[in-house]
Image 1 (cartoon, rainbow, N blue to C red):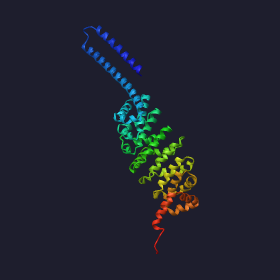
Image 2 (spheres, one colour):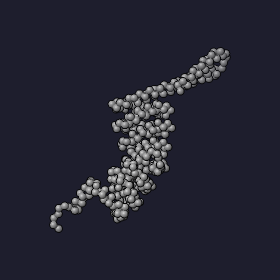
Image 3 (spheres, rainbow, N blue to C red):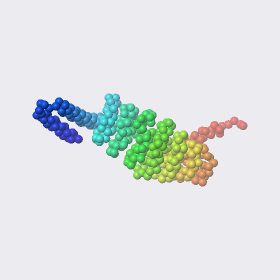
Image 4 (cartoon, rainbow, N blue to C red):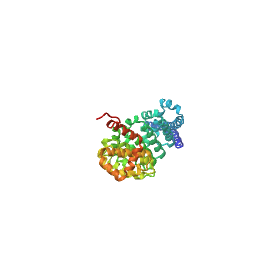
Length: 376
């Protein structure tokens, strides 16, 4: 690029010299208008040259600054000083100017910002200094390395729950963009985007509701991602995590009905994958908190007992107990009848092995069934 610009400048300078020679040879009677036109052309060419030189110098400066900041950012002791000195703002300015046109500069700049964002104290600083907007604009880059780094950096900013308000209220449609990225053909992008949404789904009920509204407006991206058959199992894990968190929103239970059914279908196939099984069972337990869901969840009891309660990992078994106890609280007759048909022994054994649960039950019963009483 630099060589091409230099060649263009040389050609323009030659043209300029030729025009000056011709001008000297022209007769004195030459019209003033033609002379003025030539002078204007020369001025325009000079301005173009100056602009090209400025552009080249700016790009060179950006290259050196990005590389320098990337190097400096690898020293944690300097992070606070660099951020206060405007390093994050400088990175964002570089990225807004070059975009992904210079891959190495973009990678250096994003990598530096990413390192800053790993510091808990600087996540909000990165958001306030323009980091979110810079990263969102690069998430859709056709250059995979840039896109992945950008969405990973957004994920680091989102880890701070205090940043959620600004992200949901962003003028740049941050949440809608993230949801659309869950349909990316790049499974790494999908995985990181869903992890970012999982962090966003840990916030307030208002934010959960907004996330579901955005998902509906974007064409139910979460459902499409969850019902896909990716080669990367972490995609399903992260999607299940988002769904389980959203399942705690009481006002959105109707909107979540299809996802609730999908969770029930996925559970039997989660054996051997601890994290996925935990999130799926947690989602069912959260759905079971709400009475209108109970009769839709009764069919899931056999799968929960056989696949999770009987042989699943401890964290998933605890979620399975929570699922069954929530259902028992709403429909004791139907649930107990199903447990007897399925495997009541496994359920009762699991309850007996959960010491904290038993302590809470006996402590609660102590009020209505005290150990010591006066004669009646």
